[in-house]
Amino acid sequence: MNDFNSPSGDKRDPLYRKKHSGVPGNGGETAEHPRDASGLSLVRDTSANEDKLAQRAADLAENGYLENTHLYDVGDPRQTQGRGTWWDRARATSEYNNVAAIPQMPDDNTPNHTGGRSMSSDRRTHRMKYDGVDGFAIRMPSHTAMHRYADDLAGSGKSATFDIPVQAVGPNGHIVQGWVRATRLSRDTWSTSPLGMSPTAGSAMAEAVSAVAEARRGEVRSSVNRAGDLISRAIKREQSSGITPEQVNSSWIGAVGYDPRNATMSMTTKTGKSYSYNDVSPAEYGEFLAARSPGAVFAKVVGTRNNKKKTSAGRPSTCPNCSRLSNNMAAHMCPSGIHGAPTAAGAQGNEAARSRASQVLASDSFRRHLEGR
Image 1 (tube, rainbow, N blue to C red):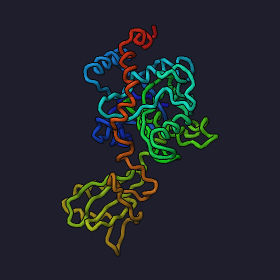
Image 2: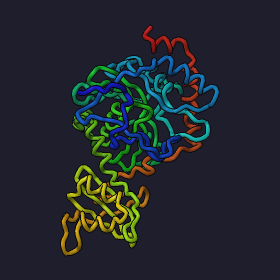
Image 3: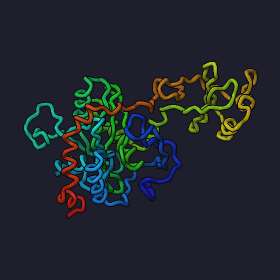
Image 4: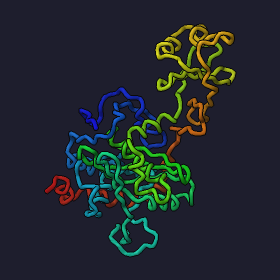
């Protein structure tokens, strides 16, 4: 497994979508970061955990709003002890907004509401450790707890969006704790996005959550391990979102898009028809975009009806939500509106966690825990 020089990297890899539409405060932006498809590296943050949380305590008291963040090298997801502190770290790193919010997985989502040590004095939500390849392990609410909470929010098998606390250890031994936003699209299909974490750690943790959530009964324990390389899985999921079209100055071509993975150019005409062509090189596509007369370059690159130079890859469809082009709309994972919108009910439901977060962030004993004292 390879390490990166920093957890943020530089802006070169368009395959990492740091923020999705529907996540508060992001404007639907796309961040670009390098990512090695060979595996996961959890890199130690340069800022101290305690300094980060001290600032969060002040921000929460002054502004009433916090974005998600993460902690490094505190606790161990491979061990079961310290449940209360684990949930306190989760609350300290979560997002809070007193106007509208995405619901957080509560610490007392159990079926029988028997006595326990959660904030409500019920038993705590069941957490499980799921092991992956090359030493990766993640601790998070169980498969059953996730589906039960989705049912609580939206009804059996229906779409539901909520945030899930997670903690993972990577092959290099570094530990990250943070949150993943999850939407159950159907009983067997989930969409997940990392929140406030470095690209590699966040991508792997989000994919681990979806692997657990989508696993069939009897396969949940081995679901993360069977998913194999979680970074590669994240890339494949991103690839299923389709091609983003770009406008060109043409009297008959509406927009074009390019997929460098399979050298396919897709285009739509102003009459509403769509086409895809194989074997188009990046240089040819760049020439097409830069041309004053895209139609003339099209004839040169693709060829006329009687003298095609490129093989047709079929007719793509345009997603009505994100406007991306895809040759397989059935497998299209739309990045627009993947997650539900924040609501006032979500903010109200998070109020108990928010109150506890204020106590935790101001606690000297919690800061000593972060410092290992």
